[in-house]
Length: 87
Image (cartoon, rainbow, N blue to C red):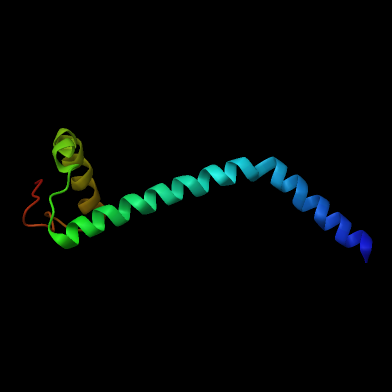
């Protein structure tokens, strides 16, 4: 009984030594993405302009191509959005 507990504790210790730093980094990234999502959602809810919209204009040509491929893959002949036509 004690050997099983010792083996499990050693396994947990070595797992923490091997992957602990990486898991901490991933948890930090997830928290940052959650914070960004909450900021964007609250700004949208209060009607404030999105500060990233200006920077997304540079990506518009690439987004049109990707959006066209996406809606064709989903089975739509034309764009499902009236404000975002690509065909």
